[in-house]
Length: 300
Image (cartoon, rainbow, N blue to C red; front, top):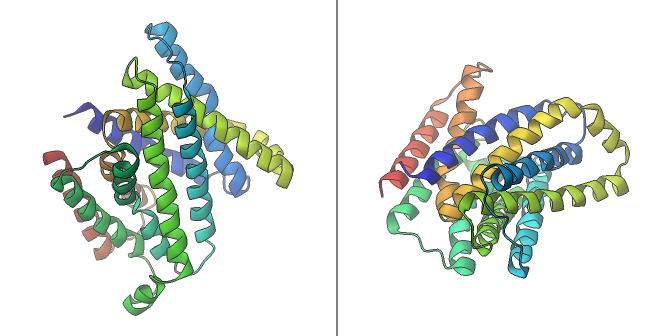
């Protein structure tokens, strides 16, 4: 099995754990604070990753260049924008369809990767993306209380537009991070990914800190009060992101994000095994489609 495949599956598993941990922060702080925790508390661990590679393994730290700065800035801002749109979408009715649209990230990453980086995908990879996308959509709408006609009408709603825009921003971010890492041109995919991660989360942390300071200073106090679980979120989140960036240095962002849909399987398993939630037929079919898409991706 290729290296990028193992790294991606591990990153998806860690991201699922991070999401579970972040749910525990929802009652302790607001949305901005919970978002900041993901980045701000990950900075020390990103520094550790770079330090271990530089001083522990002897790899030289690549010198950032204007191209790297541009890609990182684009990706970091796009990721924040995608997250903000996703959060805004949750306050609207029929947000399940919007969630499904936000999961079009792999397909959009394929388009942006072709436009900006010249990444080309074979027919098998495109088929795998399409199959897994069907599975994600099924799981996203499986527990909607609305019937099929209502879901079809909501396709043209504001919620769907927000979800599609969120997926667009996340697709741009994925391609941007790949572009940033590749622009460093060595010494290897691990150091390139570590430096990209460090630059990105430092920038994102500064932006969110300034935002909280201007819009809601009390949020900073709530973040400090929950520092223990926040540090754990930072560790898991930074490690997951390190994995994403390594995988996207080795493989196209679209292929990585297609395989990353395995996170939905991990989330589904957590809801069933840990929270003992009911499983319906649509969710089961959704999981089957995701697994089928992943198998096609790995076999092409």
